[in-house]
Amino acid sequence: QVLLGESGGGSVQAGDSLRLTCVFYGRTFSSYVMSWFRQAPGKERELVATITSGGSTYDADSVKGRFTISRDNAGNTVYLQMNSLKPEDTAVYYCATKHISASTYEYWGEGTQVTVSS
Image 1 (spheres, one colour):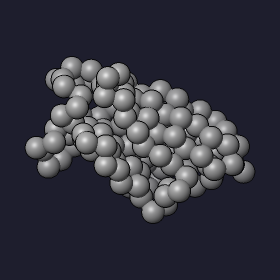
Image 2: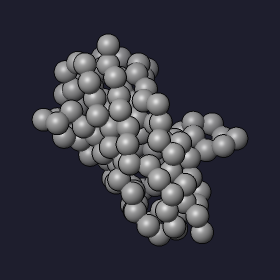
Image 3: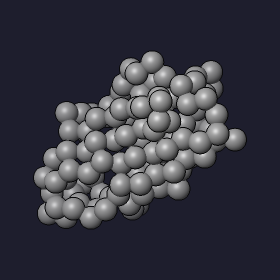
Image 4: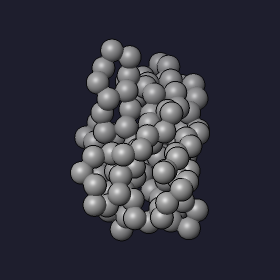
């Protein structure tokens, strides 16, 4: 069983920065792919960024150049640094994980709200 605990959301102005944190509990962190998803009101959940166990990253086009995903394998933690925030980044952000051998995400955090006002 894996548990994920997110923190770091909040209400900010456009152009500000936030850093989201997700702590991983229960299994060998380095064997898991970590991702951040988000879901805005009335919209489908979308993948924001992914980091593999080896540190390779993927960023959605909508956040490329503004958001950075990173992980600390010693601390069982993944981060999402969000810079130059825009109102369209407003959403609930979810941390999710899957084992490196899995095809679908197995575990999800409860989400943290990010609200960006203009």
